[in-house]
Image (cartoon, rainbow, N blue to C red):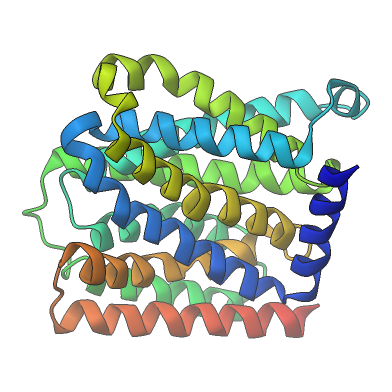
Length: 294
């Protein structure tokens, strides 16, 4: 059928791209969507945009992969993995976009990076493996303004929650990538995340969910920041361990700062740009070390 050929075609194209390239494309898509989403906040709020984003992404992925209940039931623990991934995604999205309401995108992405950083640190087995993680956390401190204490708790708390949820999702989705073929598990996970976020989103946005301005922003964000990145990340996690994936996503603060500057006009100082360079160098170093180890 046609949807099978489209799905196989996507997997074939993604299979030709090096795993670090897939992660980089996913990072850029996520941060582009995060920078675009605030355009719909005045009408629908963060929760309304999150719900629409997940709903549209879930519908598109289900049309693409056509998940079958029998396919998941035949794999031990598949349903628990899928539901766990969807729950973590819903929590991450709501927390992240609430944080962007109170903090610059680059700062939120920096705090969110602490989740993957914890994975990179916990998975280290050699002293040299800690080098890129240490360089990255130094970049995080610089990008965050040198540890400024003036950041509002209303933004810091949800950003920290997003970091925890994102770390958990990386671990759970790595298990999902190895147990389930294609993107059936991902499609079900995002559909479940949309269902979980529905009460919060509908209560906050109400009739604004049908506003054309809100709908087009949510649709673009869903494709650029959910459908493509999570599909690419799933392919990448089939080829690299979660530790390497976690350090590679340390490019998120840099991408968040750049898209925040370009789309939202959020300017950064010299320490923040030095932090971007440090985080980028840490990601490249982690990629090289992971390749040499294999």
